[in-house]
Image (cartoon, rainbow, N blue to C red; front, side, top):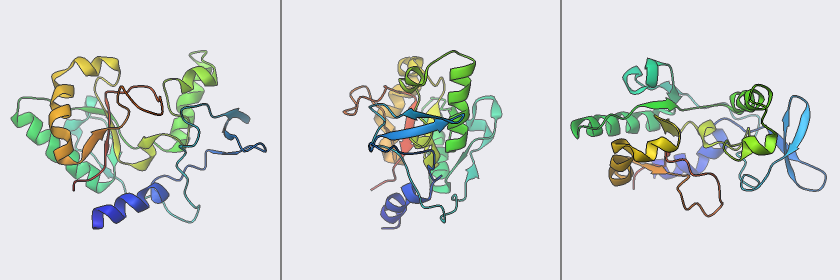
Length: 197
């Protein structure tokens, strides 16, 4: 019951999406560098919102030995604990699981877009083909991780095969699979903690 309440309440506490708003016509927008951009399908309708009075939940650091380059990555405690247990079992099975992304705020996601648009000369629409707009990323929930390598190459790794067989037992699932009905980009390295039954 605790996990069910946790998962139902989490979208409202985990990083409040205050990144966009509904435009006069009802369309969703995201503001980046003072410019309003319409949120394209498949992201429209999938923003994570929270009232401003709810604080960001307590995040905990993932053990550095599970992080690429031993960096600092944070998750909610239950997700971190499940990831740690899953990585330990994978190691016993001869599989190395390493992550290179965890919690990211809407503000951080906005910086990702600014970099893509200014340094990589991508339009907002081009960036949205591959990266969730600010306020639309599961990473802001503190439950999602990207395993390394965090791109299409991950699907060809033993770690991906292992996760497909065992991740559900630890409460993780691939949330942007190849056959996603909302047509978000396939991200084989992106997995989200949803809890265990």
